[in-house]
Length: 154
Image (tube, rainbow, N blue to C red; front, side, top):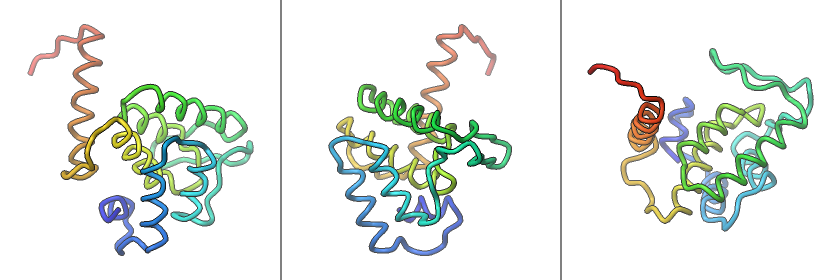
């Protein structure tokens, strides 16, 4: 959690409530929109799910899909697929691209990544999110290039 906060520019230790909510989240048997909403409410109390047309966000150069009921449906699809496939990288990428909340997506997305990683039978990562994410992105790139026939020169 310290690393996740630092990524967001939060330079304090996680609160007890954040730590407890994260532990409950990553050890859950199943994942639901309700569970994600509860976690985001702890991380970012003023954030809300972008289920109305006027709840649009832009983060840097990323423009998330327009707000509306489709956001909830897309989030439910991501969570359903996360229960079937053991690809925490793909789930995290889809979640962050959707950006389902007005705020708190980074930390909740990393918690979702960790939940799926642990659910797939992996141990708690000793090298941290950014380090492991780097290796997962390299693997995803290798798979993409193999499927696309890309023959780039080193």
